[in-house]
Length: 209
Length: 218
Image (cartoon, rainbow over all chains, first blue to last red; front, top):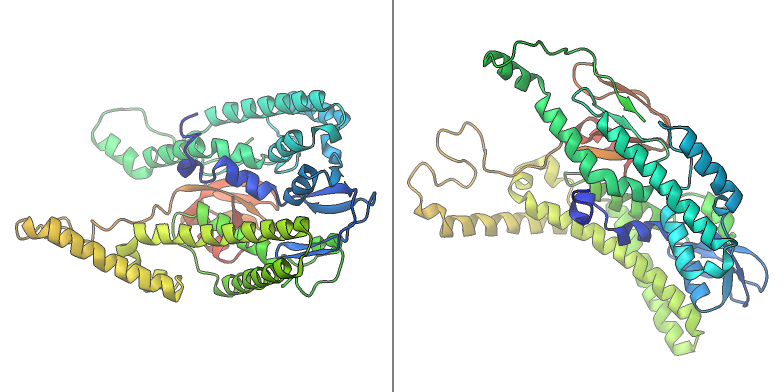
């Protein structure tokens, strides 16, 4: 998609989206003893071997990399849950299923650094890829319905990475339609006598998908 | 909202009032997505700078007292992440100020959104820009076409001053229900804004909600 690799148009680079996602809280099971961490971003711990505790994803990955913990698979990332989500995505062409806002980034980080902690990692990964594809296809289909009448778009349950990827195209499309469908433009076209078809300036409907 | 006083467990800390890092992250995202420069959150930035300084001092102490490497590196990561957010926030603003320097310098409202240092930056940026344009180009143009701000004497307004495009579309989410919200001047476009739903709207229409902190740009 045009502008996808240009962070300026997408606003956030993929690393920046991941950066934001890294603050999401996950459960870890440490295998060491460590005092509580009083950080600027929050307080975590104290850590005891085999006692599950909640930490931000960046911290979990740091500990995991050093072999100091295992990361518990989030509830939404189980084979059963994801199979349900995929089915639901396929069955509802105009809705997105509720998923964590950062599901793509979280799953990627977990696959990269904690694959051994995820049960059925290979299947889970391919499920997530399928879900991404179905959802993205819905976004593309929805984009086709944008017209000059569109003054607002509702994208319930779209995730962070999906928003960032589609942003440049959607903004440019909406902007172009807004500009070209403005009352002044239509008036000029009428005055110039180029077309005789009257434009229906009925109430603008907001687009939902 | 300092987390330094907080003895509670991580779980209740997560439930409690938003941390400064969360607030800074929100300010950073809003600044990234908004076409114009937003109000500088002076208290937040001061608090964050204090916490950064405190952590830097703590890390120095750790180096002397031989604290475990792992703990040091984790605190260092926390520090780096916070520094990144702060620096990026400040840089974003500087970029916008530089881009729209003349436009900002002419508006008291816009100037009031900047920190004192940013105001100094904006002023000197505008001066340097004007001087450069005059010396390199404008002084060589015929009379009537040599204004920095107008194309020619026949321009009715300052048409050579770049302005941010306020009617660009932005992605946003509200934290609480806003209800029926009017997007345009004539009342033809009304949207029902529900908490946690994602919308793509014209920035100009929701400017007020962003300033009031009721809607977040993502």
